[in-house]
Image 1: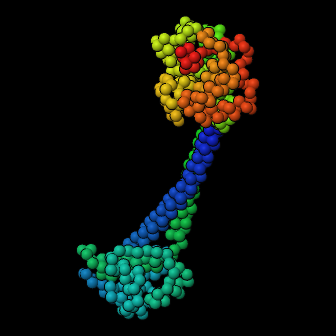
Image 2: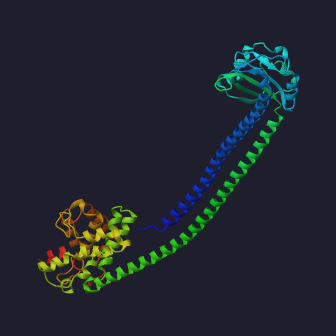
Image 3: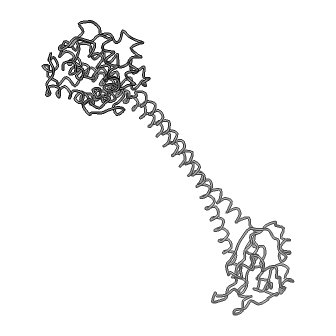
Length: 461
């Protein structure tokens, strides 16, 4: 049976899942954007700081080198010069940020300094252990904003600053192949720090603004998508409801059409009146005794009602013949279960009843038709309808014989247990018979019905 509630439940779950996924996507995007903004901000500020240090370092190194190199470098040697002209010191003081300069040989000897010149010519082995030694070895400038701390920085501690802009720059030979020594330059850090700080602030503000804008735009898109999905879901639910209503109307129309067709079968022979309804009632009573599930009961309800609909194709002369059927006539009768199954199979509401209609004339011993099934290969529901059909045929008058009494028909059913009828179905039949005996009585002595072919052939033989 089709479920009318399932589409709505499924659609509501799908809508909730879609909206939830959008919210999860928005949260995940927020995390990704935050990580991206942090990484980008860190990279940009680090690059800015490095660039600011390099630019300041280059500027200071070029200025100091321009003043001191002509006095300290002779050929490819760095000479100790404790008595440089005073105007050189004055030139160095023209750079307002410059605090101090030291010139070193690769062996750690202080070649020159503008502060405490008594240190000139002295060798400081500890000076080569840090950034100064690395600068000379790698011939690459190094700049940082740091605190004064080494042995050779003792005089610079008197500058009155807790940290300085410190530059280590190699003094290269004319051919640029080796380091003659190195400059150690101290400068005020305020300008570099101010530039770096303001640059970082601008970078973070821009990065936050850009990523916040991206997140806002994404949140707006997600919101619009959620609204659109909900609106479409409402529209789809409305259309689904309309389709389900149309489907129900079509089902009703289909059942009405098949019932009309079934009524046509009943109308073909005055003896067939009420047979389908009686078979349906008896079959349902047997099924309940067997504990058949509700959905299978629905199949039995339709299978019992429409079990003989295939007889619409059987000529009236055969259906109402008062004598024994010949071989061709019997073959025509035997086609009606397959024909009925073919008719009913076109209606989706009746799909579960198709095996019942096709196999209700199969026999437990395999001598039935149309497929010659036997034993448990026969659907139980078909066995139920088959027994109900045979019972009603035996207990109603036919053109070719009078009806059996209830006791005679019951004896016949017991005799055919395990041959024509399923043993379990026969047992359930008699249990239902004891509970509802009136259901198994024919409506009236004059009740007429469609012939039950196996019983008809046996009776007329």
